[in-house]
Image (cartoon, rainbow, N blue to C red; front, side, top):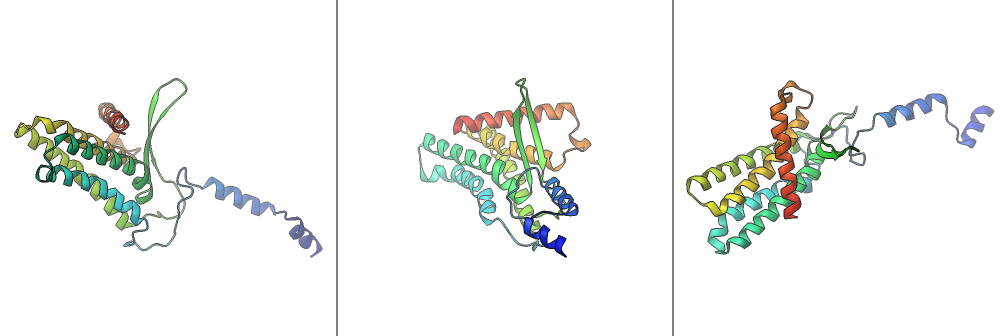
Length: 219
């Protein structure tokens, strides 16, 4: 009893306690350490409402401005700048915020000491059940897939109707949102043979590079 009291007073821990602490530190996820992880969450619950709202807000606003600018404004330059700003905000938000919070995925680029560029596709690793909910996952993937398809339709319509001045805007929307789609699909299917083809990886990397450059220029 005296030995136990002395350990409590001195603040020392037993070897078993030290092992448990080491194991818990090793099981920490590689990113999002500060995220609120709930083991038991309602699948219909949207735990990150602001991230879910912003995930759809910027891309929806860009399409609405594109469709309605002819009715409310005759200034092409102001419409184009507004759409590009909305697309850039959407690209940054989806790449850096909503993907990490809503589905636990992240893609990014790093440059090594030799100056070589490497694309990294990550998924949250943890021993706890996935903290994301099915409602958040549906919101994320639905928005991620639908809007690039819409921009593809806009680009085809622009070409068929010979609206050349809108072609740059349509291509920018397709590239920026297509890059996020490609990046997150790579995160979801990383390590599978579906993306083992070198040609696909090459063209995918070119798409991501072009999107990053476009976002930096517009910012």
